[in-house]
Image (cartoon, rainbow, N blue to C red):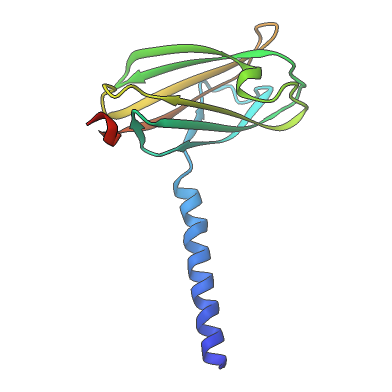
Amino acid sequence: MEKIITSKLFFFFFFSTLFFLQAFTDATDVHYCGKKDSYDVQVKGVQISPDPVARGQPATFTISANTSQALSEGKLVVDVSYFGWHVYSETHDLCGESSCPISVGDFVIAHSQVLPAYTPPGSYSLKMKLYDGNNNELTCIKFGFDVGFFSSVADI
């Protein structure tokens, strides 16, 4: 009986460790745009789902951050590059991507988008700047993401 309990504990610990490690391997490497790291909004992490992004299917970019000031309005400016070439830009209302007003402390920005089926597969880099309602830059981050080689079944 003791051997069975020990065996179950081992498997529980083993699989818990795998799930814990999986969370770290899924984390996206985020860098601030310049050497400045004293932004009013500090980014804690970015998660991309699915990873790699599938053409023709929804992809969600979730950014966990912390702000030192309350925000009631603002905008996100996103620039995407493919092998160093600028390929896409868009601007979003902050309150459309997060719940406003945003109180001092932790908050999340989430954006979902479907990439067209003709999107070339490969490695992309994304640069995101966050501005307050007075157009003051609150943060600027860069991170990479991959677009897979296969589209959704409906696009084949």
